[in-house]
Amino acid sequence: MAGPSIEALETGIVSGDRSSIGRAITLIESARDIDEVSAQALLARLLPRTGNAIRVGITGVPGAGKSTLLDVLGMHLVERGHRVAVLAVDPSSTTSGGSILGDKTRMARLSRDARAFIRPSPSSGELGGVAPRTRDTMLVLEAAGFDVIFVETVGVGQSETAVHGMVDTFVWLTIPNAGDELQGIKRGVLELAEIVVVNKADGERAVAAERARHELANAFHYLPRTHRDWETPALLVSAIEARGVEALWQKVIAHRETLAASGDLERRRRDQRKRAMWIDLEQGLVRTLRAHPSLRAILEGLEQAVIENRMPTRQAVIEARSKLSLVVTDPSS
Image (cartoon, rainbow, N blue to C red; front, side, top):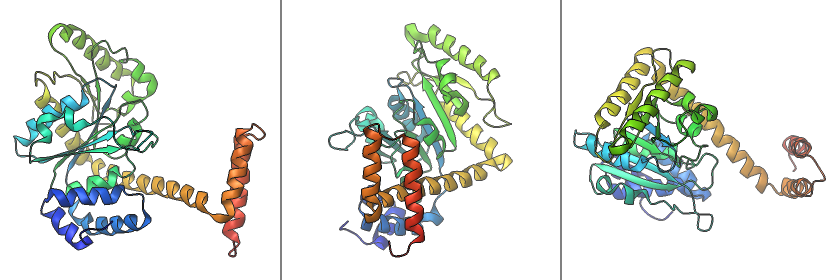
């Protein structure tokens, strides 16, 4: 990527220069090998300035009002002295690979505020809807002085575990009469949620919202706690009327303080870093295997055999692993 040097980017990021922040994130998201090397060199320089932000994941069913709530909550926080960043992970267009939701248009006030930074980021088709470099982007934003970072996910039922693995507090958002209050238990999402929020608790929906909140609160009596000292609360919020946002934020703070008091906040982050390394390693190994000249033809043959139903998928994997072992032990391959 042509542009400023790593040293110049670091200086710009630390000073809060938005152009430098944007360039750094673009560098991180690049699929080019040369850019990946530069991105990691930059992150290594920024690491000492990271780790101080409050990291919050927010997910929920499509139409639950995640972006609207973040617009209201984000403005609530910047007006109280915080610097807020939102990583809005979009589903990627299957044609162009770009973001297709355009969260900036749904966070109209926050996107115009100089104390906030919003980055729509394509998920690139990754399982779970979480952009491949979301974790690294969070580090850039922390080094730039943003002390609250939200990760908003697609909310298609697969992204919850991935987001939970990179934030301090995981918020699940639903709405009255969504039909998912108890279905969420089957999906396992409520077992991950540290805070549950029923949005659109206003007007004619207020009664239904309270009913949904009550059902969810009762459900947690039958679920294991996310932390021994934390009982997951179920809250009511009206993003359109800006009601309940302060109560939500206080629960975020209370949850983080609970983790910090027991030492689990740092343990959680250490575990997250370890898992992130292994995920990146596994993905990198797959890319390397696909590109290996000795293995590519073999893998393509096994793939075709599976497609044509001539070989069970597990057998193909066993044979691929066997061939890999030969390649690894043969220096000439």
